Image 1: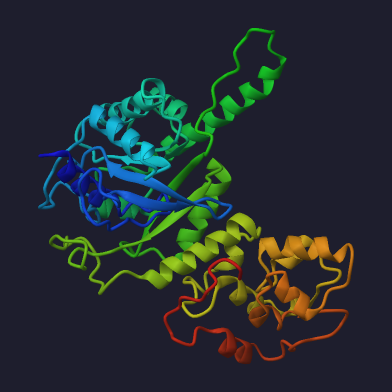
Image 2 (image 1 turned 90 degrees about the vertical axis):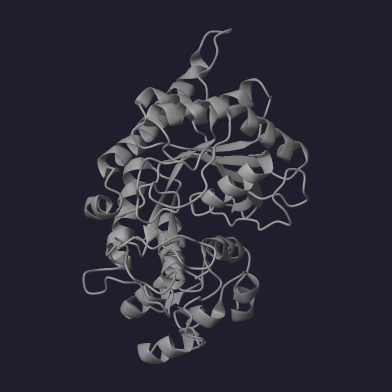
Length: 422
């Protein structure tokens, strides 16, 4: 098999891993050197920059038979693997041609987890120490790999990720019986503890005698994970509660949510596994709402139980979770924009973290107006029901049903935009 065929197969096999927040490029061809090579995808940084990554598997051969995975052992698909040398050369060539700014590398479990992890580490090490590559590297932690290998991986990679994939051990046992939630969480804990240890050592390194070398940086971009949505029976409340716990316990940078796409859907071949739910297609609206709820956890200081409780186990498909919370807590509104502090502003629908900071800055020098709020980035369509300016209303929050009718998605698709300024 030539290199072009390998790229096509192993890039296609990697595209369902959402933990680099990317979308695969279809490209005009699959062979090395085309203007839009296969395997190039896009990831977005926290400041909004788009970064191109080479996203591939080392191998799509796998001993595991996870029901939701296109690379599962029982799947009828072409199998192949890169060599370390091929991946190093490929990454460097793409980088020199300005196709990519980084590498996202995972693999099927084609051998003992330690052996697979060694191959990924060897690739990253050669890129750093022999090829002189200074771009971004994201390595996947292979479930069951030893602690020493995880520590080594973090010395060459910018980010590590161990995909938990399903929210409960019960679901893992049903759909991925060879995987263990305890093992995956153990890998996350090892990354978190090792990162904290290296950070502490570096803080103390400023007191080292002259000539002594500071400790290396360990996975400076932290770690992330992925949850598959819709392949198992857990509700949104369970998923959000798990994400909140992962953020607290392991200081994760991101939890990514991947809508389950059943085999047989265009672009995802194969015969459906009888263990999987019989659903017509990917629950994209549900994935979208989970990302919005996740944003509330990470940047808006919401607790999981504030977003969903036992009486409402699923997120509203027609209204963003922040507006839903506000309508349930109308006794806390309206908020006076001229006096509200930052934490209070974050709770107002239509005011995002960026616009809240702008409001505080502008308030120091001049009074605000409703038109001025628009210019600061406030989405007045939603905010107008929940705010006052010097006691003046744009619209009073007197009837939650009326507000809901105006703010719900008119097309019924549930894809309310903008995504995060809500």
